[in-house]
Length: 538
Image (cartoon, rainbow, N blue to C red):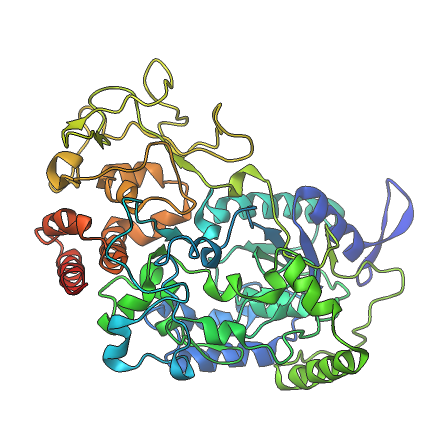
């Protein structure tokens, strides 16, 4: 073997190894694939300084020194294979459903310099209207970040990366490899940028010109010396819509996020109390936040973005290209030796689809799961009839056991008879006999919701807040055992629900919150008290 070219005995021909690896990556199911050199030192230095400045908040794992040099992970590493997988289910964005439900996004109109200004945020309105105390009987709905609607992406990506690693092992048996999906001490985004599968945008996400930014990243460190692809040019231009849209001013300048101000940091990564001054801006986001990607023109559904891109005059286009070059000069560049330009017959960074709008996926793993209810009268999740009495809701028949679950009642991808390409989440809504039951349960019999204007099953896409609030700790653990939602843990889940209820403007949550004030955990009690006070002022 010499460099990235070798002879396969079965074919007895010289083969372009990078092209084969990238093509096989697409065949395995990835949507993007590229090869990066190790010359990401400027990017890695920027990441290190960012952590030292405290931008990572309490995410102390970001200070791992192995993140500064991939050789500390794999001493023989010479190249990084980068892949992307689109998770964008074909459903509306949070900013779109917000037009019908004014408190979904919690997005401010225009905050001065995108910063919070003292008590002004307490009466902040959304970009679609003011917080309301009367929703006409419609259920207040929460927002869960679209990446968390389906199966845990770590599981999906890891399985495909292992398949790709098997391909590399077959092609080059002596090669050493390590694979990572957002869990190891490596700055995936830095190498993905150099691999050409996307540019680092002003919202700090990676954007692919043809796919948008709704894709997961995975990397494989390898001892193979593979010819790298060229980095993608920065195409953000003069656009700053993401910075202007961020409700908490987390995007403190183009290409720089202060994660300690980010909504996704508050409701996922932060384990303690959410700073009170930021709570109103969180809106109805109970897990993550999609706003800076929702508003990005490169994530257009098609028509808006195409009109923006195609209506430019020739002069405007040249001006945009010049701006792109200037922006590229400001961004960290790879420190590499040798020729960057791939050979004419080499497959460059490639994508499965070619279109200038945000790509979507119908893969079952990333469609919104459903919360189902068992038909037995003993089910924990019940509904309130018109007379205010709690009665069991039999729902649709499921099976003899009342379940639509597999693998010891874990998350299932079975879409059921009601759906086509949407997955389904089911449970028996109560622990089996003999299982430990939490001493404090938010069961309907205790919380006494005086309203129920939704019916099960409930999708994780824009779900009624009430439905999420009915889950016990055992329900949460069982339902989300294979979901990204498990990361927040039940205490964080209740904390986030309290914040959303306080922002809903709906006083019908008062009884649930009064119950939450009695919770044994001080974090839950604190946020429930805040929510009650906020609702009392509406």
